[in-house]
Image (cartoon, rainbow, N blue to C red; front, top):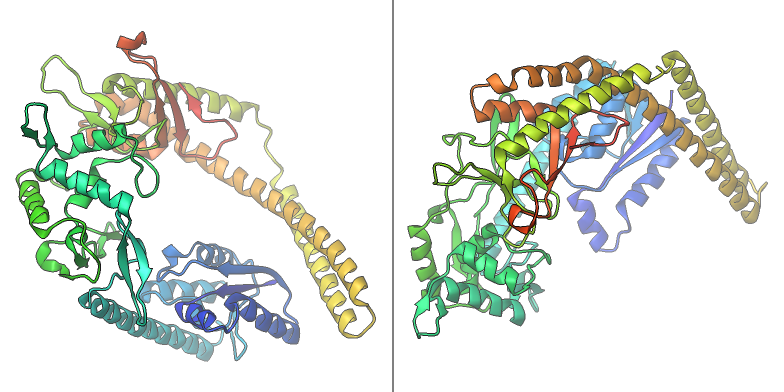
Length: 530
């Protein structure tokens, strides 16, 4: 069986690169290729993890590797140290250890080969993972202490600068501070003036603007945000409560909170109270006065945002499901106080031109679209010719064998260059030819594996998701509340894209909108349109 290589860059590696020690992944790859040559390990795949993450969930390449190890695809995995595999918590370390143990997959490092079938190697491997976790926690504590110390010195430690400022390096000392961006600073002053004092009217009086009206004003003036998009109420509200604009530095405002929900780890970033934050005088120049900032906080406290918590029930069966076809944001339910006016589905972005429609009408069209899609999907299954699974497996084995042969040929080319049999020109010529053949073989293997995976997924969909859609259509109108309907719709739909160009006043019709449904299953059919 073949072997693979796993390369991952750590924070210490990034610091070493900054000192001029060379690119980490390239150095590790070269070292492990030498190990594979000495041990005659046939490397057919190299996995490179660039994203730095504490958990397996934050490392997609590691997830893919573990999935293949679990299926017994590899004889062994080459890695610089066992610590590169997992530095997460005990659960993550246990997943890695058991995956390699039960699949009988070896872990090969430059210093030692870990055989999971060997009891002593297993203990040594688990001890290595424990020590790596301990080292990670120690480094993380040191980094957090350093950040808090920098904050207390008035330095700006976040990577992303707030609107109105740019992040600049401090001269002759470590750390960063903020520098005012004049054009953006004028917008910040305008926001605070409109909210605290108000705009000047022709009669000489002033009228205060709320957050939503300020959003409309900025979008009407075509003022771009930091990322170049439209303004939304959440952005304005965050600006009005951020003390950075009156010369302060705030830390621990959106700290991570981890909790277990239904056996799954959920990471949240709730807003902290003022007492929980570290707020100190910053080294940067203020844009507004502290008096104006305090006035804004007093006015904000009188009109707080409506909280959304577990005690609030879902009012819309389409909550979080329908996407605006023009700006890409989630569409929301808007109720009306008038008894004879039904709720509508609308885009909350004031500058978006997508026209709203009656919520009940959109809901019914989604159900009709699911019903039509289900009929089309059944027809596709009846007309589809099933693949010969055994034949596909034979093709996959043959493709893997051919790829292994080509890899050995490429290794022989390197040996002939070292022995002086091939000149550099001849070596490059043969390498290019073999590289093209290897790439063609990999593309062929990937196509076969995609076909196998798609067949398996489609069969699973036929057995599970199609009956789920049938059940939804049968019981939907009898469900007790909006949350139950919302949960059932989300179980069969990834999203629904809504677009409407004209309202009734512009000559349109109440149902003159387009919906694109994205069912939760792999299919060669395009998204269902209704």
